[in-house]
Length: 299
Image (cartoon, rainbow, N blue to C red; front, side, top):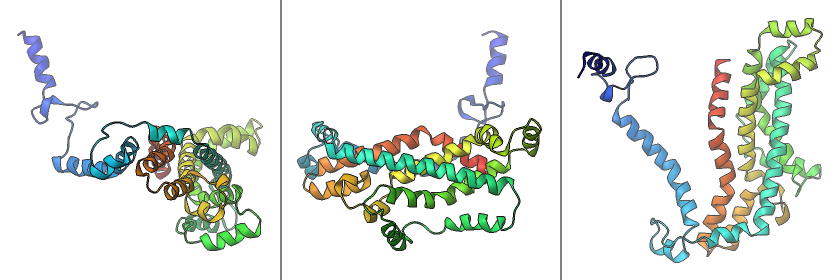
């Protein structure tokens, strides 16, 4: 072995770390204790195991689930998923969930961004009280106000209407949106706004041309959270929607489970397909959520 090769091996190897692992800054990488990894894997297993059981259960037969509850599918049965995917009921409920989730998300992001812009960039009386009001809204979940909320929805004639779900979801989604977006909008330098004003840009033009692009990480974060929360909402549709034609997927899972209570495998297939869009959506944009929340904390 040449001296040059030996020198390189000496530089790469680190006796304090197994395998000479080094981080990007040139220092040794700390792997942490095995107990930390064990606890992390344990939590991951607790979260992932029920989802895997539901998904794999849709590929099994009812007899196999009864005799071997924790076994893998043997044989793999595709008929349960095929029956759900060819059902008009499933796709109707899927369409209702998409409409409710998209309209609610657009409303939450649009109204939340406008309110956050006013609170973050302008000084006026009761500004602190307005921000405190939205912060207090985080302490009152929809479940607590469901009875008076239903009375209001009934009085305005939105019972058994998708907008009877959309409007309250927008209202209850605004506190989280405002709390996340205000730090983003405050972090925009005043010099940019002054330069835009000198160039003749109006306040509305500054909002659309500068504020929205600069606060895009926060906007994406609140949009993702609003979509997932709307997609998984169960209590409000349960109170507001009465007819099967207006059911969203969470209500559809309950109705399907009651109708096919003896067909466990098909119920598991329906449940896994109902939760799949939100799960995929969250997995794809997970880094966006973390980055947006980190930026809000820094701001």
